[in-house]
Every structure is written in C-alpha cells, then in structure tokens.
Image (cartoon, rainbow, N blue to C red):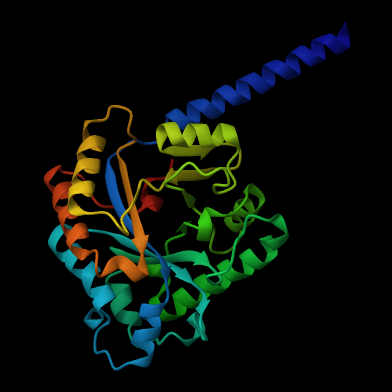
Length: 284
C-alpha cells in the first residue's frame, strides 16, 4: 500500500512538471518583432582582411545590410564559420573593430560551425563543438568587440543535441537560444518529437527544465521572389496561430543578389508597424 502511494505521488509530480513546462511554453512573450540572420559567413571577412577597404560598408555584402538598417531599421546577425579554405577568424583584421562596435546595436556576430563540414548531431562531437564555439566568440571579441556578440545560434545543418546546448550555456559565452529548422526534418536542433510538435505548432519552444529557448527559422530567403515573400508575409499577418516572430534567414553567398527581395520585405515589415530586434532581447 505504501509503495502504491509513493508511485501515485511520483506520477502526480510528473504530471505537474509537464503541465508547468507547457504553461511556461505558452507564457513565452509574444511581442512582435522581425530579425534577419545570415549563415555561412566568413568570405566577406576574408575579403576585408585581404583587400584595401576604408570602411567595412564599402564591401558589397556589408553594404546591403547597412542600407537595410539605415532605410528600415533592420537588425542582422552574421552566423560565422570559424574557418574556410585556408582562412580562419584569427586572421580577421582588427582595422574595423571600432566601426563594428559603433554599429553593434543593429549588427552582431554569432556561431555557426567550425567549418563547412561540421555536423554536431553526434554527442561524440560535443567536445569539438564547444572548442569551436569558444574560439569563434573569442575572435569576435578581438575584431568586433564584446558588444558585437549574439549568443542566439543557428548551428550548421540545424545540428546539435541537448547535452551540447546545456554545456554551451555554461561557457563564458553562455548560449542564449537556438534557431531551429524552417522545415520538418526529424533531426532538428536536438529536439524530441514532442518538442518538435510544439515548435512546429507555435514557432517557438521553451524548455523550462534546462532553460533553453528555441525559435523556428520561419523563412529561408535564398531563392524567394518578391511575390513569394509578399504572399508569405501577408499569410503570416492574417494568421491567428502564428507566433508573430518574423525570423528570416539566408546565406552569405546569396545575400547581395537577394537585396531587392530583402528591401521589399523590409518595406512590408515597417508598413505593418513591426519592430526589428534581436532574439536575445526576447527570451522569457
């Protein structure tokens, strides 16, 4: 009888914990905001390190984002590879550090992966991931200043696992949150099927036990047309179930060519009265 009572108490405790977790999920702030992030960034940093630029914004890639900020107030995070084809972040010039710091209120850098081949789905690779994460942020501070850090990450291939994210939270550059995939892949940022169901429904998920916050990468803009982006945005505006977090991303290689699409999207965002902000400023 005693054992039965203990079992009942245990099951009730689990139920309360799960209800609390669901309650925390539903209580995540729902203030509207929009944000851009760019994956696979490193080539532009190599260019400005090796060529004679007077300003970081003389480079076409950085110029696109300066224009979007000046005209519409856009914010952007550049998700960095640590190395690519013989260049790594330790070789990035400090020439533009003051300029990056001056613009850090709208332009920040985050971690993406050690290099183009890295995949952090295996827990056996967690130790390497932590090294890559710490090395990337230490270099960002060196060439762009502490103010330029954004510790809300999108890992390469939407990889990662819960143990890794918990470890990254405990580093000196503590992880604030994770961008999850824009599609319905099964291996997605270390989420369980139940957690995937939640984020696919709500576009956000808060793991209250481990204090990990996830937001869905809502739209990939690499190949979108102005017509497609406009229709998608209007659908989101009219949706009653959407989280109202407009979390757009694309890749370094396509950003300059997609600047007309980015400009049109910014016009829609501003016309709707939606502010631009960083995900780290909107964590429960």
